[in-house]
Amino acid sequence: MEVVDAIRSSGRHPLKQKFEKALLCAEQALALYSAKGIAFSFNGGKDSTVVLHILRAAVAKRAAEAGSEEAGSAGPLEAITTFFFENNNEFPEVTSFTAEEARTYKLNCRVLKNDKPFIEGVQELIDDLNLKAFVMGTRRGDPNGAEQDAFCPSSPGWPLFMRVNPIIDWTYNEVWEFLRVTKSRYCSLYAEGYTSLGGVHNTAKNEALRRTDGTYAPAHELSDGNQERNGRSRKVPMSTEGKVSTTSTEPGTEITEQGTEITARGTESTAQGTEITEQKALSSHREDTTVGILVVGSDNLAGQVESTNQAAVTISCDKLVSKLPAGVAARVTHT
Image (cartoon, rainbow, N blue to C red; front, side, top):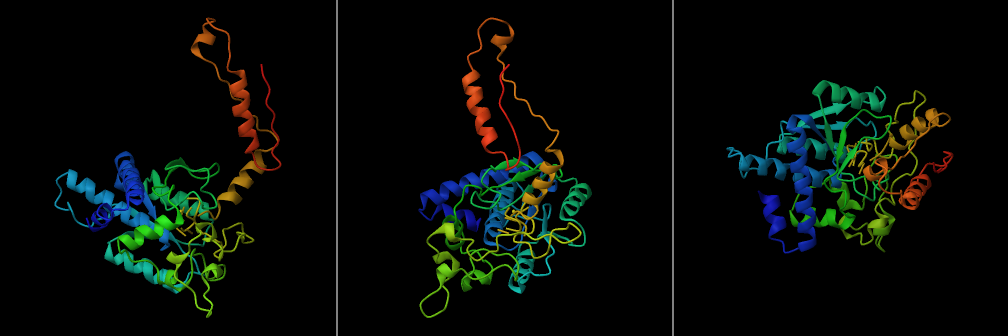
């Protein structure tokens, strides 16, 4: 397949390692949940575009191993549901790009309407298609990506599903290295100075790319990946009905650049409703929830040895407490 060949023949060893790891992640997801049990969050952002090609490579590889006539082809993705979130404030360039990619790679697309709370749309998608996992373009530097791994269960308060993040450990520069080495198409807005895409009302060109003549360099020339989201709004507004607003920074991130987070408006566009939902869940249980952690070895239970792990448990519990949201009280006690 052209993407695999381009990476493996590029001589870029670090990128090749990241790609092979991401490819394995996608293969494992297909083996665990099957193509029909997976949904791919695609919003047209750079991260979800990378994941699109990783999925293509994984499907093609599995077809080759099974001796399918599709072996070595682009990897048909019809069996995998590809979804994106309807956003009235979407850039026309993003809409055009996603439609073009859907036609080119024969994606089985489904649109989640914004006429209902976001979380309900996700639940309906799961129920209708019996989905088990969502493949997203979330990366560690995304708003909700720091605590995620390649396989990560959905957050408290959300429907139950597995988040699959093949490029969770990729950097901004590695994303662009992949797209350029493989000569993959990407949304035209990135050539105009945009480095992170949301809606038209909360996304601007990255000032770090402004040239002295007032024009902007393309996104791949941004040397400091930490400035990737400079052109994005920080707050995620909510409508009066409690729905995720269509002007949200990343409509679907809880699951990826859609929300990269769902990334599908996810993977750059990551976590639209995630923080709000988690805060609501915490506030509704904050007064009466107690969590206990008991660490006991079999030798301790048998009375054969004296427990010596109290110090280690105390350190671990202290670390957990330090990560609790502001306003949540907790204490560590020993018995």
